[in-house]
Figure 1 (spheres, helix red, strand yellow):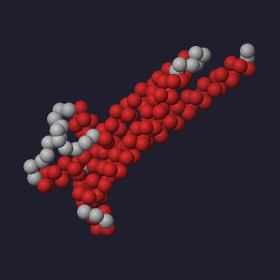
Figure 2 (figure 1 turned 60 degrees about the horizontal axis):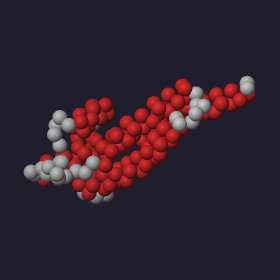
Figure 3 (figure 1 turned 180 degrees about the vertical axis):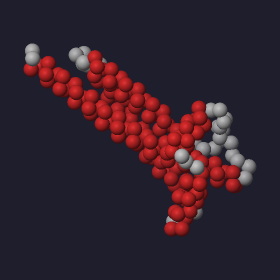
Figure 4 (figure 1 turned 90 degrees about the vertical axis):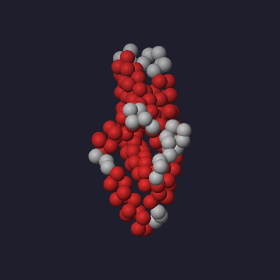
Length: 167
């Protein structure tokens, strides 16, 4: 992948935000190696796990996007609540784009094979480091966005109830 690509830029931002280094993954791998499997095996296993979990979380996010946009179609919806629902839906869209980074395939044609085993191992090590950070960040964002949607809906119910009482 091109060094100037948006994905590489996003990777660098994630690594900078979390203070990650390849040594983080090497240390984690070494601790697992003592008890479990070879390093590359654990990276591939973790990629598989993150892929599955990201797919499931992406399904939840897609449903929440539909719910948030669907609720904006209600005729008598308070304009502030409607605005919050749009903000919520767009935030979920950003999380969906972020999560799709975890589903990227490593290898040709967009990612060339490295010339040495060491370079290939370093590439996979870097990839799992980024994917783990993306997934963990996405989970936290989805938790807060889901709580936020619950708050927005609660506010709308309260507004609706108060308006019904005063009519």
